[in-house]
Amino acid sequence: MKRWFVTGTDTEVGKTVASCALLQAAARAGWRTAGYKPVASGSRMTSEGVRNGDALALQRHSTLTLDYAQVNPLAFLEPTSPHIVSSEEGRPIEFSQLSAGLRVLEQQADWVLVEGAGGWFTPLSERRYFSDWVVEEQLPVILVVGIKLGCINHALLTAAAVQSAGLRLAGWVANNVQQPGRRHAEYLATLRERLPAPMLGEIPWLTDPAVPGDRWLDLTLLDA
Ligand SMILES: Nc1ncnc2c1ncn2[C@@H]1O[C@H](COP(=O)(O)OP(=O)(O)OP(=O)(O)O)[C@@H](O)[C@H]1O
Ligand SMILES: C[C@H](N)[C@H](N)CCCCCC(=O)O
Ligand SMILES: [Mg+2]
Image (cartoon, rainbow, N blue to C red; front, side, top):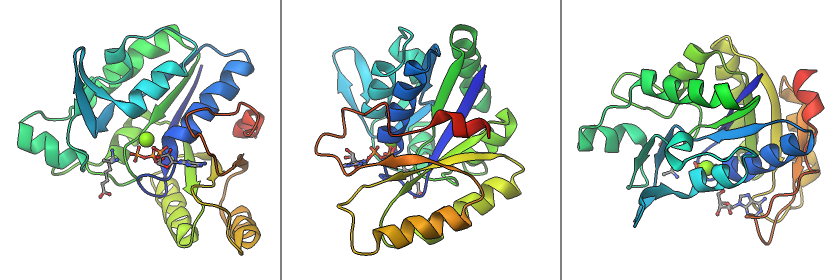
């Protein structure tokens, strides 16, 4: 049974794109996979209920056939920090609910990927952060680095926070959210040298990010 928590250097750095690529790679390696987006903000109302794009993508890229509510138990419409909409709507985000959803997936899948919301310290309530739940669950962490100026600092801060929480940073993914610039090679070299975990691979700058490749990432490095 493998479980991973995917965080990012920020919101919009490609956690979902990388998560779909990770799920594809795990499927190719023969695992029974499930994606989980316990808390999503930034959703739309459909005839079937509130739906979030990240959760739909994870649902599509899981090998198991999962109901939407299994992939995403808590969806908020407004694209803002979860603690803000949660408080405004009077719908508290309970860690017990997030964990119960994870337990259900663990019964069916043997490779479960959990995507956070935003970066490592996204608040879920007045007092608690998404990272507090990850600590409670003791999930190893995969960090998605959106390659652009500023990402070195964000990546190192996130890695330091993961480690000071006592969690394992299992690997990181270089995601080209922009066309690679002049110093691309230097950024990657710096990240490889200073991040305390293996680079699982690099996702190219894509014309269609909805179609992940299953050969960009080396999952065997996660257990190194
Ligand atoms: N490698 C890539 N090439 C081109 N576009 C990309 C790439 N990775 C991500 N994008 C685009 O950047 C945007 C943000 O990506 P994504 O939704 O995966 O980020 P995220 O970190 O999951 O954000 P959130 O915090 O909302 O969950 C999307 O529009 C996505 O299509
Ligand atoms: C709406 C966005 N795409 C994410 N779902 C939530 C991002 C929360 C960020 C919180 C913060 O660090 O300011
Ligand atoms: Mg996402």
